[in-house]
Image 1: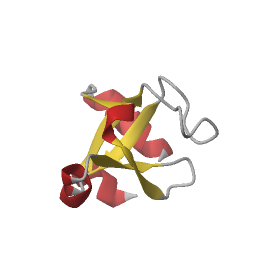
Image 2: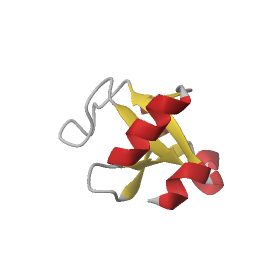
Image 3: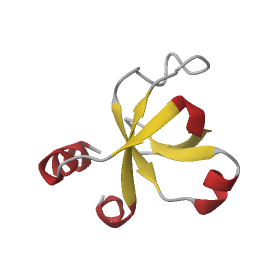
Length: 77
């Protein structure tokens, strides 16, 4: 999806306590910019189906990826 390229950040799940079926630990996830969600302590994370949902920001660590890895992750999303 093209909107990912301009708005996406990346995060790694470090806690899936309340979402064990939904999130794999240590997996790179796409995060969309959502200022309202951030103010509430959440991140808008894109799941494997391509849909985005809000999850607690404390469950993720924002990471920076080399461009080649970003492109690879976004190609899958």
